[in-house]
Structure formats: C-alpha cells, structure tokens
Image (cartoon, rainbow, N blue to C red; front, top):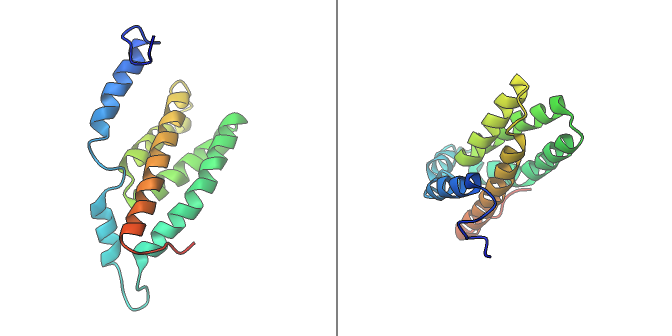
Length: 148
C-alpha cells in the first residue's frame, strides 16, 4: 500500500493535505514585503533588505531550536516567548504562512491550550524550511549575500 492510498492513516491527513495544497498557491514569502523593505533604503541604511533578511536567516534558526527545546522540555512559558518572538520575525520578512501558524501557537500557549501544539510544531517546521529556502534563493537571484 502506498502513502497515497485512500486507506491511509486517517481522514485528517487527507484533509490537511488538501488544505495545504491551496495554502501553497502563494509563495512562502510575500514579495510585496520584500519590495517595501527595499524601499526603506536611505544614506544611513543603504541596504535594509539585505540587513533584515540576514538577521532573519541567522537568528530565526537559533530561536526555532529554542522553541523545539522548550517544547521537548515542556517549558510552556519559554515556548510562548519563543513563539511570540518568531511570529514577529516571520512578519518582518513577509513569511505570512509561517507567521499565521506561529500566531496560532502563540495564542494557544497564552491561553494554555496545547491540543493542537504537535500539529502546529510540524507546520512551523515545514513553513520554516520553505521560507528559509525561498529567501536564500531570492538573495542569490538578486545577487546579494545576506549580512550575517
């Protein structure tokens, strides 16, 4: 039996796959946000896009590992702090899908709701990888290396 069989593990998996397909119609990063970041250039800050993306690409993985570690340790206050910070970082670079999942996790942790945390953590992992790959490719295409 293949993983694509109708007799798969659960109906929920099929539903998630179908909803994920529509979510992937949009890129993991909102290009309008990247253009807006470019427009912030000034003599004092000639390349804000590269600076902000460099910070995201270097800082997000560290905080993401902190989120994972706090989840494994079941340190919910620390996990909430990481989720909140990561949500802001994702918003800053236009990673809207990633930000949405982190916002849900942030809200759930604030409210003490943990039922959906495993699914959210899986979604964060997927979107995190997609956003990082997209931004690295974007910077390569633009001929820019991030300042890390």
